[in-house]
Image 1 (tube, rainbow, N blue to C red):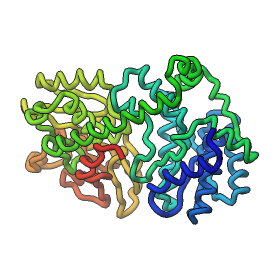
Image 2: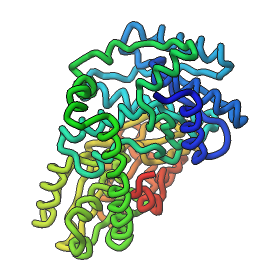
Image 3: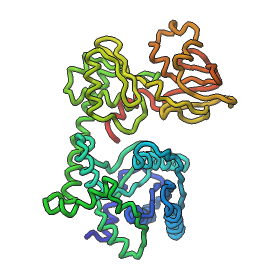
Image 4: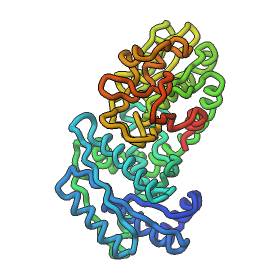
Length: 417
């Protein structure tokens, strides 16, 4: 069993690698996150670092608000600034856990940005690492999936997992010793979730030598393999791929096909993720099938992308127009990847792709020397059925639109951070 001194030492070791300044911590009220809060509070006091806490209320359970209030009272007792972030975005479609996870991360990232916090701590444990490995093994994941959860990842903000090397049982013992209570989430006993199935199978797996430590260590060992593959892929993509200001990626198939097949698949999937702004790459089975068709000269759509075969040796990965939902024109971000800046408010305006109807309103678009399909997926400002502004098609207006991440970031993001 790890004692408080050992736990504090582990926290200090991990936190030594994060930037200076205040640190945010996500606290649900469960044992893992409450232990993280208490440990980080001690670390913050010792190192003169301010700690902020946030609780995401997904509004999916009746007890959720009471749990958020519990964390608020705890933070008040600890003199830690606390905010409750509310999510009301569940539309009853798709995978609930995935939607909630993405929403949680987005809410926490926005909260950190507003407070000027560069680092946000999350309460993943060694048990979570082992469970994640098993879940991904069951899904047939490759190296990336099986490499599990990284201790530090991301850039804006940096996500740090200070208790990733600590077992859940040790954290509970620590809380009991300091007399700290926590909230038990009833979903942790719900067998309909894959993670809970894996958790309940752990005791039997341990009898076969597949202990939490063994599974977690295997995942961590694979992280070095993943990093090596990513570094090779980045080098290859700098030779074979070119990102553009239109948010597209051109791929030289002749050059790419000289590389190992694993690197070819990775290059295409990274290009697609950059074009769509997606957090995850497409499923390998679908990617493999699409790549085969591209080699036969057949343009394809997949995961929100249109992959156009321009010549037998060149494809261009671009956004699929029908997957770009219209949004009101406001200062902020469109389609997850375009920065939008207004010079003035425009009544009744919305932002959506130029599309087939829009390009008909662009005189002499052929003189722009831009592929028609690329123009179709560029953002435009509409009022009703009229294009008010289409910066990439030469129609200027009171709105500036540019890529959220520049073209150099396309290459840099290949290596997980």
